Length: 221
Image (tube, rainbow, N blue to C red):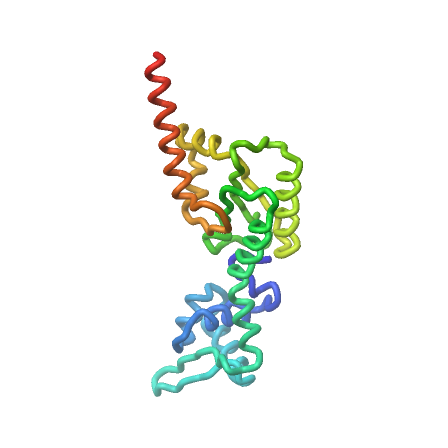
């Protein structure tokens, strides 16, 4: 699935980006505005798409004299399908959250970061997930590994994209903070929470642990 424009999975032509823009706007937009927001095709091509969609009744056209404004006809029978396709990222997040929330071994934290969280990427981009397990759990726990493995397969089933899971314990998170690992920025900015404690809470806790470890090391010297 094209992570930047999921609607293109079903509507691969210029119609896809145009419909995506219209579905996300409640107000009328000019052809040039739609072209700019769609980031695809030419102004002339976008206008041809809008004319075709208007002919089907899916798009309303408001004639203001010196300009035409286009908006999605949300009463059209097809409009709910367009809105669903335009919001596939939210659907993906909801489905992943539902699966993780049902785990027999609950995750301390789970979130999506990277391209999905930023709203960019393409057909080959990984869906990146951060999983934090309880400290008392061994890294190779069979049930935990089975849960994580099934989650990765769910990502592939839902999107067709590969899944990349970065999995660690709360203590290991503190270790990353101590070394000021750059990946912390990837996990936090931006991030879409799935379940468990907020990442900001865990980072604050990890910061206290890291500070205590540094203080203890200094005292030993």
